[in-house]
Length: 137
Image 1 (cartoon, helix red, strand yellow):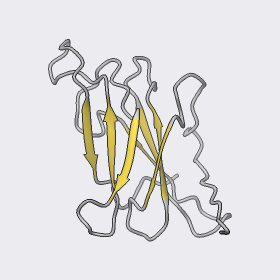
Image 2 (cartoon, one colour):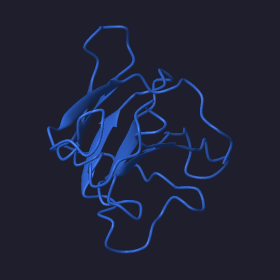
Image 3 (cartoon, one colour):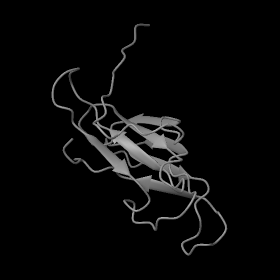
């Protein structure tokens, strides 16, 4: 069966230095509802304290042209306090569990602590509806 390969270009600053686990987890889905595949890239060891991050690379219709941009997600962006060692993005899943035509992004942070550090690591799972638009590249 013939397949198709799509290359997602990241904007400057999306790639990170080695050792952060960039690309160790991936999820593909239509997060912004435009009918194009988007890619969520996990970076569970991002930051000085291994708190982790996810970069959502939005799909586009052609190999050349305007890059639709990326959306970085951290615990702070998700409304959670910055803590050490959460490893946000160690697990990723794209699923349209509310059947609205837009995939939600399920994000695992297996070593996340309770709301008031320094509690023991309990782990968290975040159900994220990615913004329909993202910052300009």
